Length: 174
Image (cartoon, rainbow, N blue to C red):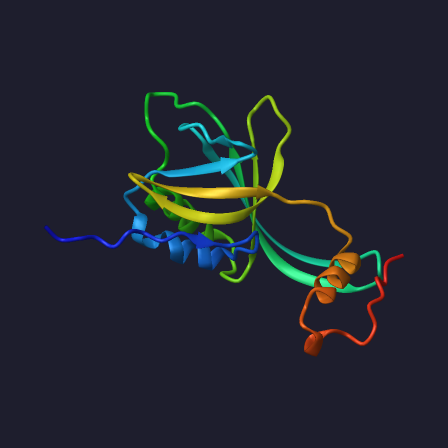
């Protein structure tokens, strides 16, 4: 009997790009796609309600400019209506292909998920991991925290090796 290689997880650590996710999902077109977020698994009737493509130009509290592209996937967490299971990966990718035919979706855009149930506030998530499971693919989402970018940069630099440490570790915050 042939032995199949076990599928491997992809750890995005909250820093996923749209193209990277789509590439990672490609081998699993026939499998149901599930999401774990905020301590729960999405209900089987979930609906991809909106795809947003945006370019952002910002100035943080330390006066540092930044710019990036982002794709935001808004998902409504709903129970199944006709006993159907979760959306297959292929359908999810097909929806994004149809959107990309009408609006520009950059493969290198940061990926954000807005998820919620109809009676709850929508919450913002980043992609933590893609985990192929027995019979389905699971996208693990992690809550996106608010951060002071200058303070966050300083904290990251302080833990980097001495050869790469900046000469001065000032927060540069307002």
